[in-house]
Length: 178
Image (cartoon, rainbow, N blue to C red; front, top):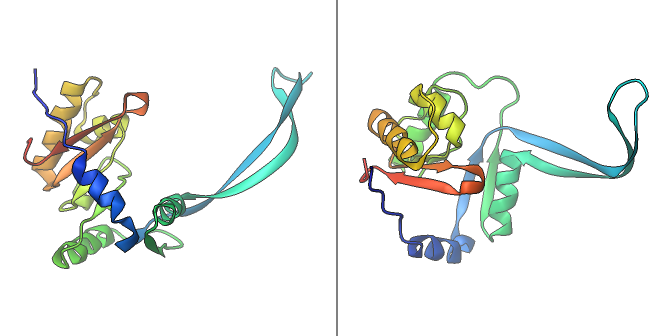
């Protein structure tokens, strides 16, 4: 069994307390999420589909916009950056290198299976399924998650990986653990 010691919560508490001093560059897709609420009073006669009688609608920022909202809600400042169209190959790597050269940490919510494009980032935050796809095998339990994270850390020079696990919380694996 892989022994994995959870990190102390103290650094996280200190970081949150200082969030008002932080400015974060957020690069990504900004999305507008539309939520419709209402009441279902019947099933459609044409198909077994519930019919919603809309009573209200809310619009919220999604994607990278949600990250900006969360940063601001914690008292930080955010600089949002987005591109309309397709981001060219290599741009993520160049941005990571520029930020790391400036001594700034880089956190990435990865998309796709090719984590080489995020090489050198401080941390990546895949969910359990994305982590398995990145290493080419299914990961379920903590030992498998830690082993997969160690593989990615070694291969792509990440400082740590935060693997989210739905209702089971998250696993944090650092380069020191690898």
